[in-house]
Picture: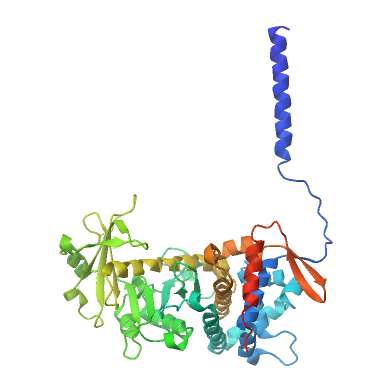
Length: 479
């Protein structure tokens, strides 16, 4: 065999190998045939966890009683169930009223679901009722929240006697003309709601307790809006947490105003606070005059020293005019690579400041507690993934009802893990809950006079779902 023959043979063999490899690559996924007339199969079967949570905490009966004034004579659908169905659809990933069709397609799991026109008429009726309808929904949520915290026991957010409420603003973009949609401070177009969440700590997520719709050009440090949001948040808490030092309100520098702090510390209210403060010229000069010995290393959650960060307490003239007992704590830290320093920074360090009313605690621990306010950003991210990516309706009153639906959905996504999940699963955000638990398919089987929802044995999180469902069923039904 000549050299040319050997070269030709090698080329042919390489071509055959490439063809075989291409065939293998094209068969990486199994080939299946699809037919559209299967029976007994339930999609979104993991949503049974949310349904059982609703039953065990009595949210369905509470909303039905609250919205009874809006039920028309001879109406087929209960307004409370209609609103709750919208919240369930949002919890499962919907972002508009029409997405309730996901529930309507599975009556065996979610019961009878109203039509789209019925849903729209209810939202319009509640929007027309204004504050009266909002107050009814919020009273029902507060009543159920107290029951949930009681059922949760040691995993409730008020374990230890303290409740932490985080208030923050969130920009919601609008891609069409909507009432109160205006230019925002970030040069975008939309709305600027104020929201509040109860922090569940490192072991959990958080639950919404207030959402106030505002125009896009609303200020970040408007004291009246912060007071109104705080009022709504406190009304959602059990009565023993609506006043007193056991309730801590945290905000960024938007809450660092005289009016808001005076309201928090008013006689008879006596709330604790930890709020960011704007670095004024007086504070900037006080920081520059602090001796090196006055700075204490900042700490991490595990108690170790935080590298490149120090804290110090300011005193003197910078406290004049502020509420009695206020402590002003400054923090300096080496900026992250690429970060731009501001005019209020000093000596190449990023300077921030916050005020608190807490005494008897080391300033490093207070600074760590205030830094953990960043968990509110996680709650906002979860809210964006749960109906707050956009406001789907036109009128502001309608979109305020939508915010109540979003809060109901977020409540369920916080309460179900609190009551039924443990370990890392309790900290799963909505996207992961939907992907691993709620999107599970199942088959409904009737045997022995009982209906069973059978989940795939090979699904990695089937055990998580079944264990969580058993925990929920072990809870007592509302009286």
